[in-house]
Image (cartoon, rainbow, N blue to C red; front, side):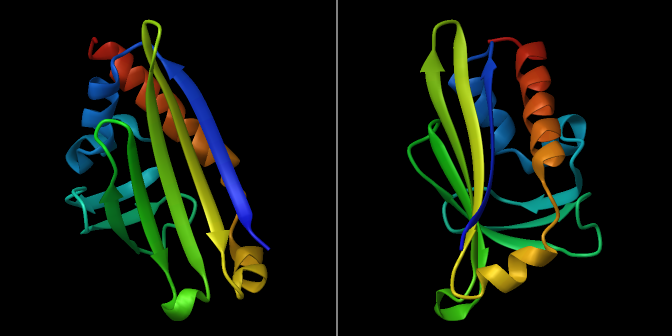
Length: 142
């Protein structure tokens, strides 16, 4: 059974501005209160090392895959043979005077029922992430 978290925001900034924040790991500490640290290059196939406040004792090593900038990016991690996978999808679409932003994380696979019992509720973390991104993008102009 899959476990899923989702958040969305309307951001009064261009998709390019929002994308520049999402793909710049060095800027995350300035606007993202839900992380302890993040390192890596967010280009296609690159690895990102993330430590979140939800689970500060674990470093997640994620593979970043990027769709058509500035519209989509996916971070994924998992076990061999698809036994358990986690996938965070970021989507941006142009809207009147801004950008529609959404972020969804879904956990799947035969072992997901067991493993997701240990995953805490990430709703607040997702809200903090989206609110921080919105504030930073809007502060930086279109």
